Image (tube, helix red, strand yellow):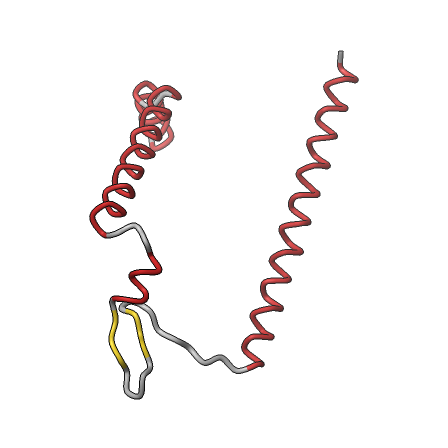
Length: 115
C-alpha cells in the first residue's frame, strides 16, 4: 500500500515539477537574490571598508572593534591543526576530481566501442 501511495505521489509531483518549472524557480531565485544584494549595497553603503572603519566601538586603550567582528587569539598548535584539516580536505578533493575524470574517460571509451 505504501509503495502504491509513493508511486502515485511521485507521478503527481512529476506532472507539476518539470525541468521548465525548475529553471523558472531557479531564475526567480537568482533574480530575487540579485535585487536583494543590490538594494542592501545601495541603502547600506557600498564600501565594506567604510563599515569596518566607521561603525564600531573602542574596547579600552585605543583598541577598535567593528560591530559584528571579534578578534581571536590563536595558539600555534591550533593553527597547525587547522592546516592539517585543510590539507586533508584538499587531498580528498583532488582524489574526487581524479576519479570523476577517470569515469568520464571510461564512459567516452565505452561509447566509442559500442558504435
